[in-house]
Amino acid sequence: MTKFDIAVYELIKLIPSGMVTTYQEVALRLGNRAYRAVGTSLSKNPYAPKVPCHRVVKSDGRVGGYGGLKESEKKIEMLRNEGREIEDGRIKDFERRLYKFGN
Image (spheres, rainbow, N blue to C red):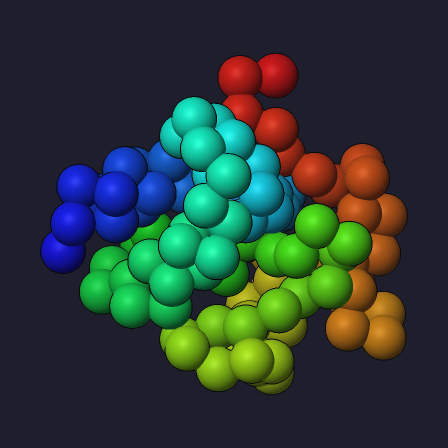
């Protein structure tokens, strides 16, 4: 595990249940534009679901992958269990549910 991975996991733990953030938001909060690297770190998250990587979605509100898979019914199920509505693979009311670090 790298220092980058650890920083990503620590940040992800801050996302409240019922909210989502994006790979981009995580990267920007870490001071870079390594959006894909954030996704790579999350795809190998050994602490899921305690480190809730299922709450990180694509910038357009699409759910995206989980556990290294491109799309995942498990991720959708986890988000729905937290009260998120998913419609056509996207977070419903995405803008209202978007968690921005430090806001």
